[in-house]
Amino acid sequence: METSLERQPKDFSEALRHVQERLTDAEQRLKEARETIDAIQGGEVDAVVVTRGGAHEVVSLRSGDDPYRVFTEGMAEGACTLARDGTLLFCNGRFAQLVGRPRESVVGTRLLDLIPEAERGAVEWLLAQGWRKRAQRQVCLVSDGQVLPLMISVAPVRTEDDEYLCVLAQDLSDKSRAEEALAVAAERKRLVEELREALALRDDFLSLAAHELRTPITSLKMHLQRLTTLYTDKGEVPPPAELRRSLGLGLKQLGRLMRLVEDLLDVTRIRGGTLSVHCEDMNLSELVTEVIERYQDQCGEAGCSVDIEPDVRGCWDAVRLEQVLVNLLLNAFKHGGGHPVRVSLKRHGDRVQLTVSDEGPGVDPKMRETIFDRFTRASPSTHQSGLGLGLYVAKSIVESHCGELRLASEGRPRGATFVVDLPLESGAPRRAR
Image 1 (cartoon, one colour):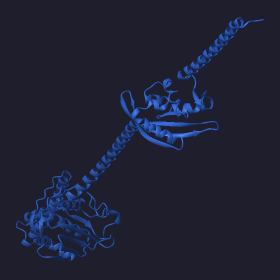
Image 2 (cartoon, one colour):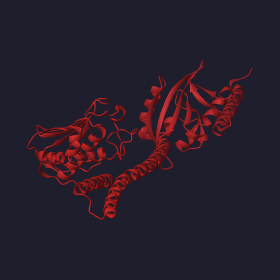
Image 3 (cartoon, rainbow, N blue to C red):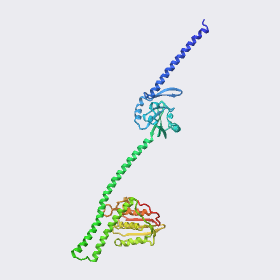
Image 4 (cartoon, rainbow, N blue to C red):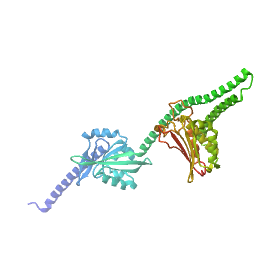
């Protein structure tokens, strides 16, 4: 019979062998686990060991997901896939670049471990939202010592067996640089178009200016030549009436030439912000009356009607307002077609309105927005003379008095009505534009 002392060594040997077997099995499992983790971290497989219900298992994203990997590797955004516990199952190269770590060290870690502590709360909230619906939020990472603004977008992806969270990270600094490049390209394109338009406008203007300047010079030359011929052929001074007529016509053409040159100079001053306006107390009623009398011949031919309120005084530049009225009058004579022209001056509270109306064909509604632009003529299809500067200069002068020049008529065929609205006290003159 075997005694208890004899059984003890045998039981101990079996227990020791059992422990050794379990230890060997554990070492084998540990070796396999290490090999699996090494393979994942080395990029040899797209899989990772995750915890599910207290047990460990390997989740693989290969086979059918290979096209997905090829697609994400070509993306400009960082992309990764998360398991339910926040572990990265996959990430593309751009995502690893954004977090500033090798990809093999990123896969298998928790996303929150890659986020600066100051931003973890925001990212944790975003991930919680993402498991229910699409969401996005801006966060900042630190990569290579630089703060990197990112727009993180998350969306749940559910399969028959499981669910994952897809994460996209867009580098906002890249977006800003791209937007800046697009803005620079758009600005360059705009400048090129403006330059082309300016060159075309310059060519048109030079052609028009040459014609308009040549006309009064040619006319003036003809009158002088006629006077010279009369004196040379007959050897006597022309009759006073003939002399007065020729000199009057010559002075008229000279005045036209001077107005053209003055308009050109004023355009240059306006564009350079150097148009001078010297305001002082003046009687606008007297000024309007003087201008009407000066152009009494044209007014008589057109049949002008004048309604001037007496003693309208204010603080304005008399020379510049005279220029405005002359431009409006000549514009009405030119486009009125010989029909009556009406001029009125009325006080309205602390403002005054000077109105010049004609009964010509009116202004095409399509030109209402551009009628005050440089080189715009109300009748471009006709043979009307002018550089298209009168209304532009007039509007600039009125605005320098803190006033307004507007087209008040409804359009064709109701004629044109221009209204100059001025404050009685212009105050500090503004720069004309």
